[in-house]
Amino acid sequence: MTLGVARNPYATNVADHLIATAGRLGVPARLIDLPSLGVSVQPGGELTVADEHGPVAVSSLAPYLLFGFPAAAVALGVILRARHAQNPVDGVLLADDKAAAAACLARAGVAQVRTEICAQEPGRVSAAAEQIGYPVVVKRAHGAQGRWVRRAGDRAALAAALAELAVEGPGALVVQPEVTECAGRSVRAVITGGRVLAVTERTAAAGEWRSNIAGGAQQHPVELTKEERGLVLSAAGALGLGHAGVDILRTKRGPRVLEVNSCPDFTSMQPYHERDLAEAVLLASL
Image (cartoon, rainbow, N blue to C red):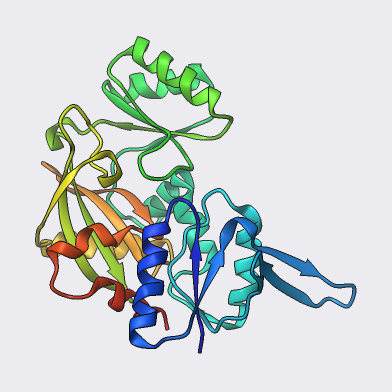
C-alpha cells in the first residue's frame, strides 16, 4: 500500500510532515507534485496519471488542497476512482470555493456567519455591504492563508478594496460582516477520520485583524463545547469531508462557522497537543 501525498505552494508544511511521518512509521509514501500533475487519455480510453516524476500509482491519498490547479483536480479524480481518501475531489473543490461552501452549509442548516455572494461588480458589492452594515469583510471565493481578503470600514475603503481585488483578476466575491465582538479571535478545530483531533483559539497579531497563523496570529489550546463540537462536525460532513479545519466564531448568539478548509495546516497546532497529529492524519488516510 502506497500513500499519495499531494503538495502545492499553499500546503507544503502538511505534505512534508506527512512524508516524514510515513518514513518514521515505515509506510510507503509517494510525493505528488500538483502543479505538474496531468492525465493522458489514450485512443482506447486508457487513462494514465503522471507528474514531473513519472506515473502516479498509489492506493490511498492523504488530505490535499486543489486551489489553483484545475488539471490536478481532474487527475486526482482519476486516481481516486477505486482508491481511498478521507476527502473526495468534489468535497475539496466545494471547500475551496467559499461561495459554494456557504450555500452548501446553508442548505444543511449549519449555523454560519452571514454571507452575501456577489459578482465582482462594485454596485452589487456596495449594496450588499450597505445591507449588512459596515465594517465588512470582502473575500474572493477562492483563496488561501488569508490572501485575497479585505476589510472595509466604510464606502471609500470598500471602493479601494474592490479596486485591489479587480487587479488580481475576475471571480465571485463573498461579503460578510466583520464580527467586531470577536475582535480578531477565532477557533480552529481540525477533524480527521470524522473526529475532532485538535482545537486552538487564535488571536490576531498586533495591528492585524485576521486571526490566521500565516499572518502572525498566536494560538492556545481550548476545549469545544458540545454545541461547538456538533457544529464543526456538521460543517465538515455537509461538505463531504472526513478531514477538515473548521474555523468558528464564538458570538453572543452562539458559535458560527466562518470557513471550512479541506487541507488545514495542523502542524502549527502540534506544540499544544500531546498526540502526534501527523501520525493521526496519516493513519486515518490509509
